[in-house]
Image (cartoon, rainbow, N blue to C red; front, top):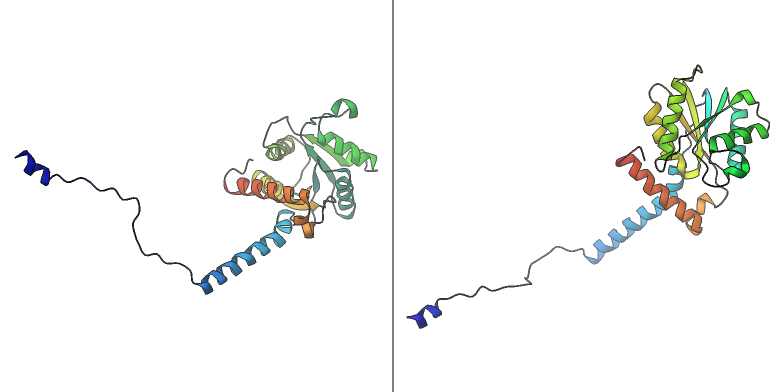
Length: 229
């Protein structure tokens, strides 16, 4: 009886592979796919810089808000913009300086840039420094939030501003300032030019590649995941 039972004992079969039919591209299909992908990559490379370094100013803005960490030649660009517009004030923002504050006598970029404007000939009553509280991350958001807090406690009436930021950082800063200030205050944006690489050929410069890649990732994160970044 035991021998008969062994005849009907089934041992399970394990298979790691199986045959199945799948659809795949033909030679012509692969050619179209590669051409389309190459075209999209080309458009991305040639249009990403002007997208991030956005310029959309308000013609009759009341104040020019300058992110104080821009380099000296960015400050000069801001001064030229101020003198050519109908602005009443320049307002500088910026967080604490991590290195060199004991030597230069200023603790934050807002005060450094305000002092630079005065050194370049701007009247003292036309420039106001609004320092950003010391933060580890989300500095752009903190600057925008501190500007709103300062404005709400100030007697100065401002209905519209142009934000001058640095190169490809402009798109992200514009997003944050609009999120915080609109619709009560209209926000335009001006991108200061970067002299460290050629914007039309940013991909041939290591600094251009690093800057574009980091700002693209940061903007996508701020735009779609956490705009306070």
